[in-house]
Amino acid sequence: MNRFSFFLAFNAFVIISLFVYYCFPKEWRTRRQTKYFLIAYHVIGVFSLELTFLIYKDIPYPWLRTAGTIVSTFYYVPLMIMGILFALGFVLRFFRDRYQYSHPETKFPAKLPDAPRRAEITAALAYLITAAGFINMNSLHVTEYSVTSEKMNGKEPLDICLIADTHAGAGNWDSLYEDLRTAVLTADPDVILIGGDIFDETTGREDMKKITEVFQSFDPKLGMYYTLGNHDDPESQELTQALIESGAVNIQERQTELTDGVILIGRNDDRQERASAEDLLSQSDPESVILVLQHRPTEFKKLSELGTDLVMSGHTHGFNIPMIAAVYWRADVISGIKSYGNMTAVVTSGVSGWGFHYKFPAKNEVVLIHLHGQES
Image 1 (cartoon, rainbow, N blue to C red):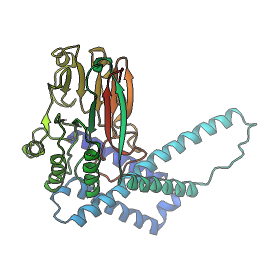
Image 2 (spheres, rainbow, N blue to C red):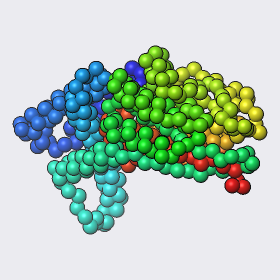
Image 3 (tube, rainbow, N blue to C red):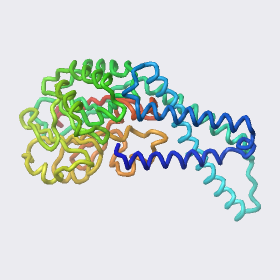
Image 4 (cartoon, one colour):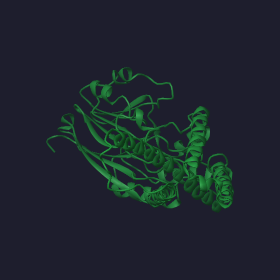
């Protein structure tokens, strides 16, 4: 994430925090005990955010990194969810009042709770969702898709493992690294494709070493290839060296033939300088099975028109509250599988999440794609 994005995110967080504060009942905001509690709550919360996003990778104590991540998760996420819920409440009450004004004879059977009760319900719901997302983050699922292509007729079926958004750092516990290793080794795919955001701003040497060791344990017969995401620093020599040591091959802005008649093309992330889809695919034999790996799920329609058979992406983290608008407005697919003419698009919700130990209702996943001919 660049400085401008951080600037926007920080200011949005301040605005939402103030909005939530002023949605609390007046008696809460004027009561001395509540005021002191809120001040302490925000001081501790902001300090935990600083631990997580500014100095996490330099903290020498594992317990402090873990504590900072937990506190920042249960500070930031509930505030965002409360902001959404309070805003929805305003909208619903506005339309209810407009309807009652236009239809004075109508009586609603249920009376809305008073302001303190609404605030209590909103806060409780926000923390329950956060707790569910915290627990949900501790498991990794394998999602399997069967994809057929006429061009695969007469060819050996191909098992593709799609990994994206590992975000090695604050969002991960060690168990998630081990779950990733177990899931991929059990699947035993023919080729492994890593779709970006392998690292992020919180990745320190310890986490970099852990994820590198996980990748080193994989030995697919057709190789392991990667593209970088918006949280990966393409200028980082440390990142580049870690990926080289992992055995993964950079496929960005180039192509390779995986097997006879099956071509893999990788693309740079949107924020990097990259060739147009037309230029990249013009170098490929249109009779070949064309696979495209890119971080963000964009330009799917164009890729289908250019003869792509299968495109694979990550980035969105699935449908993940409260990130219901920040990532999705440009995404062709939020997560899952979708057909575009003769092309199939697969978007994974990712192995992990960014910064916070939280994911809901989306799940952490590794995707296994069984690509075969229509006659198989």
